[in-house]
Image (tube, rainbow, N blue to C red):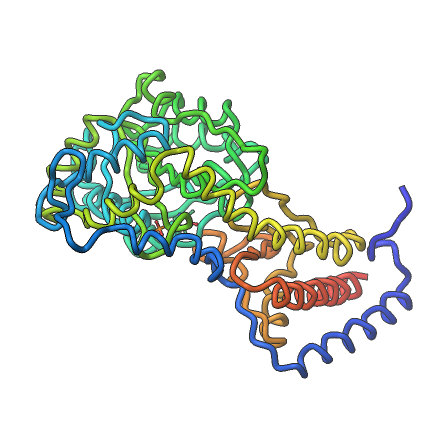
Length: 430
Ligand code: PMP
């Protein structure tokens, strides 16, 4: 193979390249740009796709759900029947295995974990917080807000590597078999945040079957991107609730999802799916916490999204808006750092992120330099527990929010930063 990458360049070539890139960088810096790519948010055009939903509920009538419930009033702890059916179909479970709640799945995850700490889960001998230590496995790179919940609740995080098939299952099986203080694992099983990975059938099976020292182990299965395809080739995820049930561990999994990136983030509808026993245990606690969720919002969501077919078409409209943004980032990475063999990145077919790995020890500085040139990225390290990326190489790119023009500029700057910092590193190592 011909050496095209910086690693094969002579020192004087590298120094000339460094000077050229530095000049480019300074030129960008003088533009005083302000580009934010730090969070995975839909862009205004995507939000517009759901504006009709706001006109859907007639103001002149009672707002009745299909079972006659007046949605304007109290009642119905586990959500409207049509909302339960909708999420059940989306997640491949029975209506009786799902409850539909408020506006945020992250909120449901936080509450589920907080209740586990306060009271334990179904089958716990005592509240988790009474134990000398509680640990969670954190496949990484992963979702920073999952890790933040653990950090706040004083749950010790153990980093597990991600592979192209999901978490490193050899490590997971070994850890859960030997340590009864490991009470759970965080999973974003489809189009994962940030790697865009969908867990293989074998990974799902092994998670469902594995022997855990803790009798009350829970998989937090955050299926946030289950319908968020970028192309017509959809990843398939094996049904985790079924797999757990077949493996004789029906209560092992809590599944979460929401319409945050389907309709309006922050004003969507979230759901939790689990075994019937898990749900009745959970609802007893939940009934003290709330009289019931926002049924008006549920009603308007279901009348707008209707069924899986409509949902699919709606998601295709999202994809039409954001796919070109993903493509733009991928082609710029290819012709920039890719052509110099100094980075690798995910090419997701769904979800909201591109995960970029620089050469070791560069991510923090790349993010810092990009910030100085006006491009805000997710902080380096954020995709690892405690914000510590052991190889300091992972950068999460969130391409959906900026316009194509802004995105082009931001990625050009990011590419220059990656190349510059890599050259500095290579020269320092020579
Ligand atoms: N889970 C994952 C993996 C996410 O990426 C996000 C949002 N970025 C959420 C959960 C948050 O979902 P919600 O708005 O339903 O709280």
